[in-house]
Length: 160
Image (cartoon, helix red, strand yellow):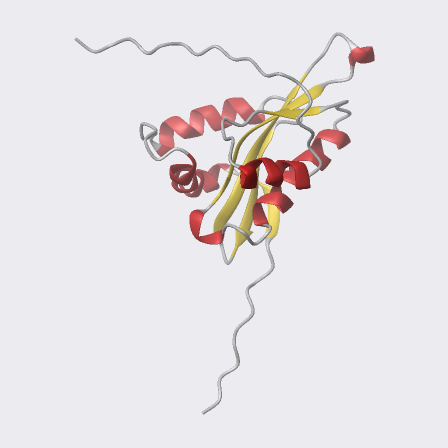
């Protein structure tokens, strides 16, 4: 009996909804496995706050009803550049078993396109990675490594 291979479904890219939170929490484990677990209820409160910011959203790539890629876009109001907002992209991740297929790039470009539609004059992101494949990923999506990034992190209080 001859079988025909089943082609993978097409990636559907859309904005995350509250019902996607459990799936988002699963994929975020591939981004930062050591992160403290967040309950779906707590994540829902953070999600609601994020989507109240005009233009801000979690973009997801869905394949066969599973979230396989995601990134968060925050649109920030601005008092320079004629009042044009700018955007920040964070939490770019593709599920480990789906990497190397272009899903992350498609989702990232969807978020960038949304930033342009919301009148942003630039889109920024930071990566803590120095891996050539990670840097190449962002460059292939049109990002340039042309500024110096700085950050300061709050040190969590120690438990007694």
